[in-house]
Image (cartoon, rainbow, N blue to C red; front, side, top):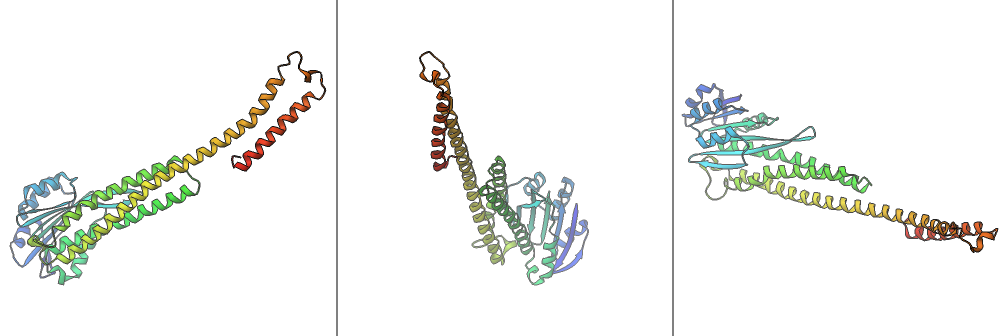
Length: 321
């Protein structure tokens, strides 16, 4: 579905145009065209391929989707794949943004991404002095927006980890904590798969030889790279904390089970003493002196009580009861 199709000249919006007018504006050296599609089908991509002269391999990747984040160069054009990661309710939603960049055109194709990039277009149009850089600046703005959207997702995951840790040390050691930590680690891996590959990809756009479309934008792409370095470092740190939290949770559960085992052993010892005395005393065999003694039963009960009382005192001091 077509979202926007706009021609720009000298950093300013020239006109909203129809799809059939694209090639006419692209052929003008002083203009560039920015087209935004959402969940494009094969027919729409083939139409854009004819209007912009897109490389067939890039079109094929965009059509099939589920690509690894990357930036590929085809002669005088670029093809960038970005993952969009954001929370929709309690679930982490992963979409894809494919960006075709040429000397005087940008085609962005958004797939399975609930939130659009209209704010990026508005930002670019508010900065005509930067929009004069043309398609390179639009690529930067789209990448910057996609990367910046990773941070709220990362903050939400960090908050979840803090809540789980509070439950752990608050005495809530249920199996649900392990399941929550494992789900959290899966979400961090998803975020890592989106941000990690972009580090190498963005490095191609500043320093040394850079694609023609990105000339003069080195400091901007370096800023995106700085964000990605910080993001990846934070993801790795939180993943380590999640692994540690899982180990700590298991250790706390083991300690709790040991406490239960000690209590059961203490109670078993308290029950064993009267059981032993009663078992022997209850045999009633001939020649047992207590059988003819009126204080036999009280004495046996007293011995049981004294021994159990001693055991209870020692277990209590040891912290078993």
